[in-house]
Structures are given as structure tokens and as C-alpha cells.
Amino acid sequence: MVFSLLTVLFYSASSLGDKFIAAKLQCNAREFSFLVALSTAVFLALVLPFAGWSFAFTVVSGIALLALTACKIAEFYTSAALLKTASAYELKAWLSLNVAVSFVADLLRGAQTFFIAFVPCAAVLLVGIGLIAFGGGKGNVCRYVLLSLGYIASKFLYGLQMNVLPESFSPVSVLLLVMLGVAVLQLPFVRPPSFFRKKGLWAGALTRVPNAAGLWTEALAARQNLLLYSLVQPMQLAVLFAVALIRREKLGIRRLVGTAMTLAAVTALTILIYFYGGTL
Image 1: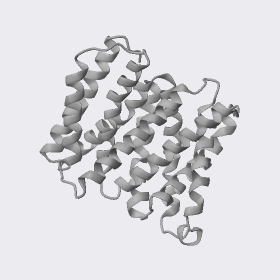
Image 2: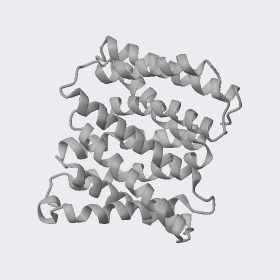
Image 3: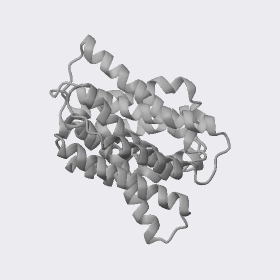
Image 4: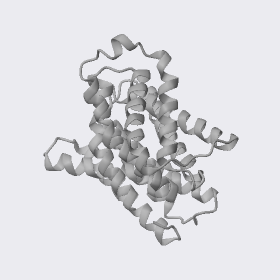
């Protein structure tokens, strides 16, 4: 749980950076992926001497790296597209769905025990997310939903792959290789002269410092438990909700009710999963 809480802290500090890169810098999906991956790789490389290198190149580990890289590219592409019009608040709400998905995955793997209360909790979670996501209305609903589902899937599959990696592999080593892979694959689609002249580019890159720390603690949480990994996003939603209330922002009745339902459903699911044999 400690790693999940640290991840929430780090990601909360860097969440506005994602919106800044996507909307303010006007980076397309490929530029967004390149900047985020390259700057994160630089900061991870600075940590490497202290964390140590631990990774064995084999066919299996190579496939795992490719899978992680593909998931990260999908995450960057979908989040960059969504953040053009959606808020970070909405994205955290969508990712709360992975709490239910992680339970189903563990159920299929024989790591959890089914309980009937899961069904109404999951239904409340879906309704809550729907109220948050569609409270303000959307132009192209089909595109929005497909991008959001792609974003959810990429985040979950990334955590699942991290969860099954050998314990001997250092998370920092794995993350560094993944980020370098993403940056290299996106480089051919970036126009260096115009891209590096973007005003505020370095400010966007610096937002990756807490993001790099968050990726590391998130990976540690995923290695321990899929549920711990999935809980990071709803906890971030709770932080954003608390900040909005303190600032007296106008959330609107739908988003207010939706957030309350989402957080209540996540809390209930977490307690019930732990009660029925889960470990935190």
C-alpha cells in the first residue's frame, strides 16, 4: 500500500504536466509520446546508478519488453488524444474501472474468491464513471468511449505484464528500456527542428521528474498486487476531488454524485476483496 500511496503523490504532482504537454504545447500523439518517453528515460538513467542494473536479455524478457512498450505507446496515444478535450479528472475516473477488472483477472488466475456483492459494486462503479465522463456532454461519443476503453486496456495490460515479470528484474532497468524503446519508435515521426523550438518544451520535460518517480513506485505496486496497482488512479481521483472541493470549484451535480458513487464503489470493493481473501 505504501508504494501505491507514493505513486498517488508523485502522479498528482505530474498530472497537470500531461495536460500542459498535450494541450498547451499542442503536441500530437507522436510528439507527446516522444517527449514523455525521452525525458522520463533521462531521469530514470540518473537514478540507475543508485538503483542498480538488473535485467537479463532472453527471448521471454524480450517479448515482455515489447509488450510493455506497446502498452505504453497505446497509453500515450490515447491519453494525448483524450487530453485535447477531456480533463485529467475524467481520465482518473475511467481508470477506476480497473479495480473491478483487476479483480476479474485475479479471479481467472485463481488468486481471488468470487463474492456476489461484486456485481452491485461494479454496477455502481460504472454508473459513477458514466456520470463523471458524460456529465458535461461529449461531441463524438463513440470516439471518446473507444479512446477511453483503449486507455483503460493499455494501463491494465501494462500492470498485468509488470506483475508477471521475474522478481529479479529491477523495475528501474525495465522502465528505462521501455521508455527508450518508446522514444526510438516515435523519433521517425517527430520533426526535430520545429519540435525542439516549441515554447515551454523544457517546462514540459521537467514535469516528468515526479512522473519518473511515480512510474517506479507504480511498478513496485504492480509487482506486489494487481489491486494495489489499480487503486492508484481512484486514489488520485479522490485527491483531485478534495482539491476541487477546497477550491470551491463548480463540479456540477452529475460529476459530484458520480465521484461520490465511484469512490464509494472502489472503497467497498477494496474492503470486500480484502475480507474475502485478498492481501494488501
